[in-house]
Length: 251
Image (cartoon, rainbow, N blue to C red; front, side, top):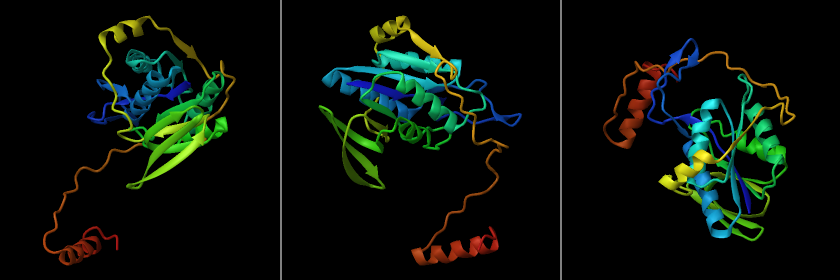
């Protein structure tokens, strides 16, 4: 089975976000593979180990994303593709570019993260599925492949929904789908020698200007004080309504 994994490099979740000149500063920031994408990558590698095939990671991001791709190769991916997207691109742009890269390669299964921890939009993967014209299953917690049939258990707001579909199919990983492995030393050494295919939207024949624009970014107000409510549920509800009316002035 040929599998493609959509991968994004994001800030480490412990990183403090700093705004500089209206943009998020990357100075001194630790970058990692988006955790949800890493669950998807691990699942793809496990499927390859169990039934054979190939795993190709596809990333649309800046040059620094090569570090994340090297880690993916060290974990067990076979190939990597890095696409340099327009600086002012949005989810629409990224999806068009990623879909074009997918179309250029044979695949049975596309996997990605359910969301990215930096913006949490959960748009790119489902847009890619639409561009490819294939079914989409989100928030997967278990994936089983039997020939050309794929069985997916997905998180459905605290319950489990079971979906069976025929490949090709795009699946996004929920937290805990497959605990990512640590790259081995031999894997790291092999990854250094594996080539990374670098492309541009023009190489893929894509011209997809952004359809949204970020007008302004503001840091969250950290001056507010948390208040703990005491008493019974009824008493807490009464206090909450009073605070919302008298202090927050929202009711």
